[in-house]
Image: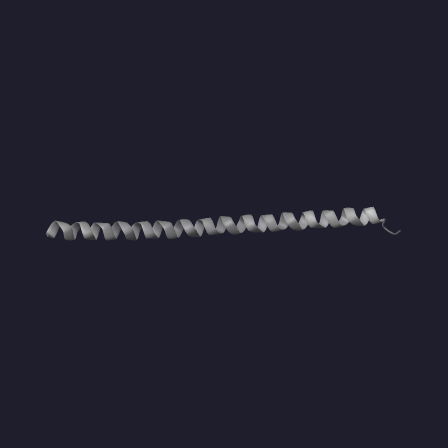
Length: 63
């Protein structure tokens, strides 16, 4: 049994849609992973800034 042109076209469209879904899922997963990394970096930088501010406040009190 040979496939008609319309059957082949439908198969191509289904394959593209499947590929697009996989790509979207991969991108979504990547963005979620990066969000966690960025949050960790942000928290670390916030702590460093707080420590620096506290240090400068103590120096200002001594002057």
